[in-house]
Length: 260
Image 1: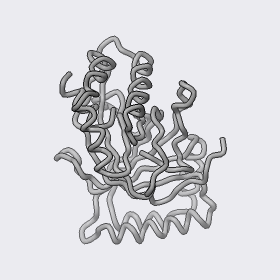
Image 2: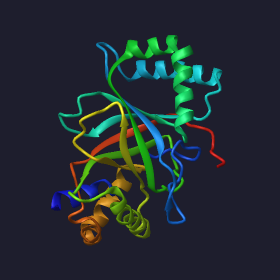
Image 3: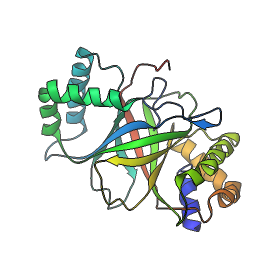
């Protein structure tokens, strides 16, 4: 349990999309909004290829998206920063919309008209994972000074025997309020595997975002100084988590603002 609580600290309890995000604010008025879809690709560069080649492929994809007026999709690339040998890839693609039907329409359009741009990506990298996660937001981040570059952490967590996620929701919401009350600038989400996996060794992922590594470190310090007591109160005996992976995220496309 000590490891679990330290992990929650390092993750900020464990993406932020900026204004116009694909992830709607799920923590408003004390209630969670419906989950939103996020797709994730795990990819490795082909021999002789690298970030500059990926930038070129993404430029072609953005031109295609502009041509087809794809205005409801946000996309990010994530590069490992704190990682281990199990993260056997070079880059993640994280993308999503505010509704699953919107994501499906974007994917249908891509399959029907994006073959040239897909070939550009396939020349640069090989992706061995394409997964979909149902995502709830527990803490909305403040407006970012630089929303195009962020720090994200991911932690795999499993509930204790006899616990349901419904049992955890009050603790998660209280922790989000506690963090905000103690100056945290993080955003916080929970992601459930929906498609593309099978046999997962976890129930859900805790995900957190910060503007930079210094802001992440501030949450780490606050937890070590006093936040661990609140963490014990809320989570002891309820959930166990592995070590967090941390990524440097770059925005590649931002959806139009959701007026709803």
